[in-house]
Length: 212
Length: 98
Image 1 (cartoon, rainbow over the protein chains, first blue to last red):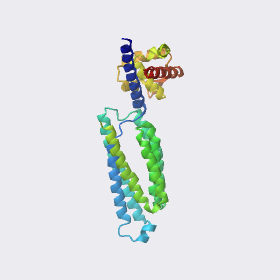
Image 2: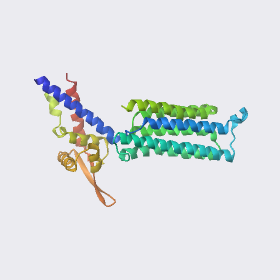
Image 3: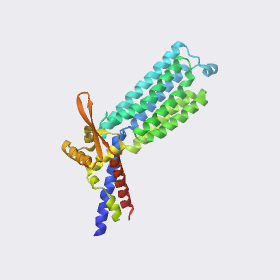
């Protein structure tokens, strides 16, 4: 008899602990990240990289590839490709995230969402402005390492306010950013790897892990 | 065993009160509506449990104005955080006894 009471009590307390954990998570972290956002932005990034590659390197001989001096017109075209990639990515990420919040019946815009966005955007906007200045000053080769680095750091920073998986994704992007600078001739390729393939694979893994 | 039971806090025996404390120990502060939405309880229910935690001095509040609307921000007191930690520890000990 005594044992039964004790085991009932234990079941209750296990439930208590589960509830505590759930409330702590829901009140501090944004949990409705969608893996499909990762997949879609990955695909868009790959498309952007291919367009950029074709614009600059197709038909160019090896020497041109090495130096890539950018005329004003080319800088403008690169800017358009970059902005189109960015805008499409943001739209698709918002779309899938909104869908996920609806599915999980979570509020889309609350303290957790704000906290996540602010902490993501501080490094990201700084990096974006820095990248823009590099482009305008003609340091086009610096764009892949700089965007990868700042994106990775933004993810590491934001990971405290959302699913913790984002942290390791951020670290991978940072490492790729450093590699993209060291092997600067392969910058665009490594950029496509980081923003495209890695992001896509991560999205698939997260989709599998969280869509029960 | 008896000592463990002594450490379990009566104030946290209720699910709503336990929920309020869980949220307030990991957040600097939360307002009434955020707590209500988080815990999915009625105004009256939440208010009465907040009052009871206030009486145990486990939580405190500040009134602030958001524009013209008064807003009550609740936060956990040091005493409340200590009591919560002790309670969790007691649960963990209870669960680790066979």
